[in-house]
Image (cartoon, rainbow, N blue to C red; front, side, top):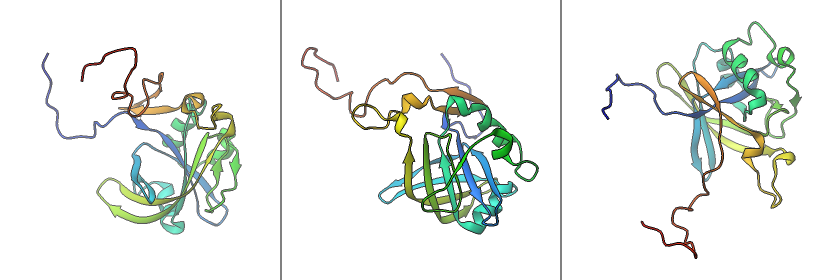
Length: 194
């Protein structure tokens, strides 16, 4: 089977579709959908988001240097899309969507209470890259909903029914296929080939 050759483009899919909450510090909060996001470093914990400079939230990110990444779920799929196509210049997304704000512990931007995980972040660096500016940020703390914990006290992502973004579409995540390291774990009952 052959493969087509396409012009250079971002084909790294799927991606997490997250809701990023921001504030201007003057009583105006906003939510922006971001799929250009990812882990930067584990020690210290850091992540990045990339935002177009013309977006309403971009100025808030520059002014406050803070934001909250709120993970999304199948229940939040419509809100995730809405927050990506409507501007906070025109509509209060929290009010319009009925999303509940929760006070963050380290930053001024609010958490989205409806999200299973909220990650409070402080920007350490901004890189102007072209269509988007990348904001690298230190993770200050993480909030995880207790209803998503398993019997061992670990966060069970499958209970949250997360969504991802892939080439213009949102998708629910399927079943778990294995844990980190399962491919080399010895099975007492079965012989495995490398």
